[in-house]
Image (cartoon, rainbow, N blue to C red; front, side, top):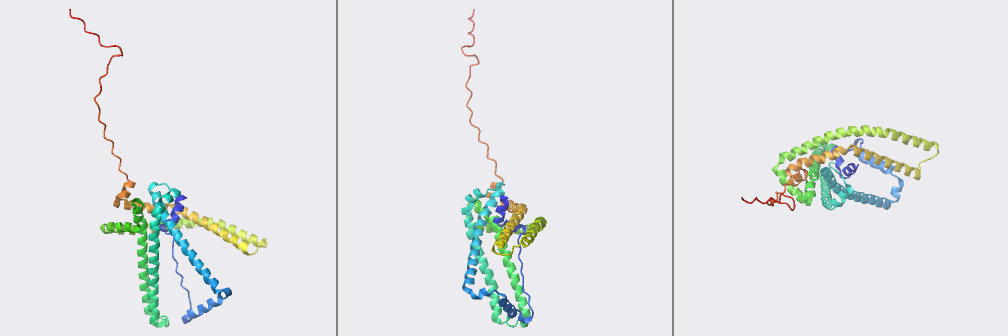
Length: 349
């Protein structure tokens, strides 16, 4: 359970393929898509949105600030938990409080690196999407899209390939940071930039080995996603069937008792949903514990022969035996009992 808690907060569940991205495109008809859909949205919006624009804007700003604060908070927690997970795999024991007190300083260094890297990545992606869109808009392709279908398709394909390449590079940088930079930071108390500088020197000396590592880890991640995805689906199905049945009985019983949806019943339903979601997350995290341990161990045992401090930690050399102390010559002892001695020689006759 400790490893599940640490692995989830360290972001290690993504190694098992427990995350995904969905893209949904709105459908429309002909050239009236934008105009009709905007009119439908304006007509369907609640009336209080137009009556209280300042309240809506303030609420939106608060949501953004709270969301950003939560992202920053969990980034810091993830940074420290990454070192706790590293220590747990090495020592084969998981101690969260002791690890937090020991690793929060070095985790802060990793946190600043991750925060700056995330801001740069997000800014780069926004620029990548905004510049082509602005250029196409200036050319007038959005005004008459049917006359520039080929250009829009080619631009979309090129933008998609470039976006995919950038995402792949960012993913490789994050993987190599947690697999190879974190051990250097943990064992030598250095910063992330210094760890990357040393790592690049090693990568230049063994490009094929590190490229093979990334490829093998991708294959293992796909295999883990399939295996643990099937196990998770079966377990969640067995859990959700009785939970769903109990929820249906509760709703029907509430209706039969004359209850209706109000502030209290909605709050109770939300709390119940939160508890069910927390239980499901706990179950999934326990299922993924083997993957959470395997992938850090795989990176550690790959990196150890290439990084002497880690090798010394995994395979410590036996301490040499102390040199023998110089022996003093034994002192002669009297073989006779106390008060006795050899008999005197007989006098010559």
